[in-house]
Amino acid sequence: MTFTGDFTYESRPGRVVFRPGAAVSATPAEAEHLGLRRLLVVCGRRGEAVARAVADALGDSCAGLHAEARMHVPLEDADRAVAAARTAGADGVVAVGGGSSIGLGKAIALRTGLPLIAVPSTYSGSEMTPVWGLTEAGVKRTGRDPKVQPRSVVYDPELTVSLPVPLTVTSGVNALAHAVEALYAPDTSPLIALMAEEGVRAITEALPALAARPDDLDARGRALYGAWLCGACLGSTTMGLHHKLCHVLGGTFGLPHAETHTVVLPHALAYNTPAVPGASAALSRALDAENPSQALWDLAGRLGAPRSLAELGLKETDVAEAARQVAGQPYANPRPVTTEGVRAVLQAAFEGRRP
Ligand code: NAD
Image (tube, rainbow, N blue to C red; front, side):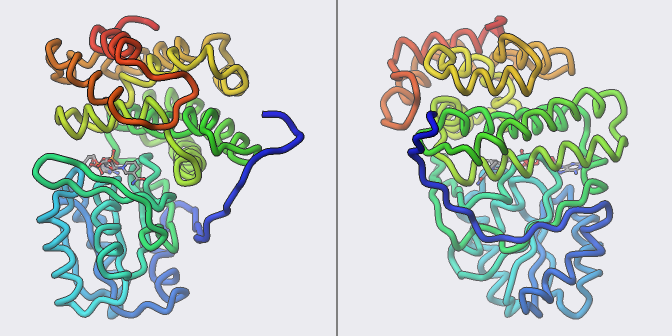
């Protein structure tokens, strides 16, 4: 990018409150700030205890707790959640949990227009985006709608202390993937580049500390700050080959979300590297490494993350079909996407070789 300047940047509305303990101590004030008096709290089964604490803190402003969030928001789950919001007479929604819980909150917001408050407990970054997803008959659709962007985001590092180390690492790399692709997105801009570089730095500093001591609150805060920046990058730019690969591997082949991002990212980045010298230089600075794709592969492996799609359950015979699906859809990518090129990326990821 030169500084004769050629970009459009739209700053997205939304408040952020960030402090340890904020889930319980700040959510009621955020509801009040938005003028909301009857909130439906949504979460997944595993996150129910924390969500109940948030619901209790809301007191009379809580209209109910709906603990049915699952990965990729199946359409029937969205239907049930919308019905629960209507039955409760809710005037707003609080989503407590990872990308799946926030996804369910977004599904309610999409259908009803109710304002959403997000209290994230992973590093997925969904809370900073207007992107929704719904899965019907095994096919995941996604779209953008400003209605689903949370009006207020409550970041509470204490909430993430319980995140197991393997999920901490893979969820962190999921966040890195947003920043990496934002750096070479067609709609990137100097502000996005700043956020992306700082996001990568924050997450990659925090992850080794968290693998050693998962209850290190300072590192938890640093990782969540990184996830915020990386999520904001995702919300403001158009993602490329890496996200398309993960979408197909998750949607069509049922591979787990954060783990798939972790395995694929070094290979997708290696494919794009020759076409993106500016993004590579930014990543080299942030990772303090000459070869960013190798540095990402080394980091994830050192922290015990899975390295191959084979480990995640993909069959070698699926590689060709996945490559066909990814190459068959037009989308923005800095390097032309060919079936052969995608196949090589997928084969390397399938085997788990160093890029
Ligand atoms: P997730 O929300 O499915 O959570 C993964 C697991 O971790 C769940 O079992 C959950 O109960 C558990 N968990 C979450 N937080 C925890 C905590 N603090 N302590 C202990 N356990 C915890 O996974 P995710 O990776 O956060 O989100 C993945 C989903 O989000 C996918 O469906 C993906 O498509 C979507 N997503 C959407 C966007 C967007 O912008 N729309 C962005 C990123 C991800």
